[in-house]
Image (cartoon, rainbow, N blue to C red; front, side):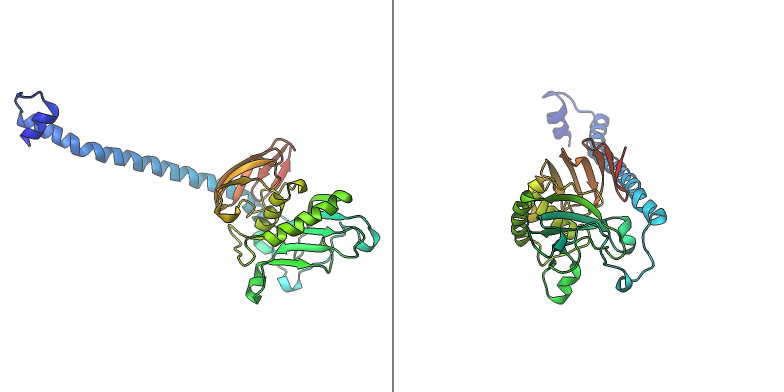
Length: 290
């Protein structure tokens, strides 16, 4: 031991004193321990801040659950899927039309997120085509992607009234429909579905929107699953096609875009500010204009 301290801390030939050697030995052992303790303290502080942030993000959904207009009583089998009277009747509207709708998810889930779908009608067509992802299709041995050519495009989602998120009509809509149909066929999660964090109905709508940037779809922060990027990507375009985002399986990420503004995502709960539309983007509440 004495030779070690003579070589490491003293000039060659200098005497080594046992007390000094013991002091240096203790210092050598304690220093790494103090470093690890400091790191642990910093990690605990970071954990505490993340928990506090998560609690703040949960205030929105809890407020909607407690004071919002959610239907928490009606059984799904008795809930309505009737038209909300927002779309024109196809036989009375000759032009091509593309619409994207979003409605609160069924029951308590609606406090956290929405369900989205895409409706199209070609020039002169007598029906709409509705594209959406519904998880229960997988239990029946079918693709999660549902394509329906019957019924209204603006249906209530189990009593929840839908909001029209974007609309295109005329010759431009006809071109969009071709691109939308190709994107639907390319959707990579045809046989996979998870309510949280995805892939779900909003993952599908976001995928189509990214594939068809001319759609110009700005999905609200309540579209949980929109940040679940395909093919295991960590970096990609925002659904509107006007910016970029970094996302870890839809659980943690940040995005910056002209349409969406700046948005932070933690465990699927998104918050941010939309400078373009002068609105806050809040979990539970969605877009709140100034």
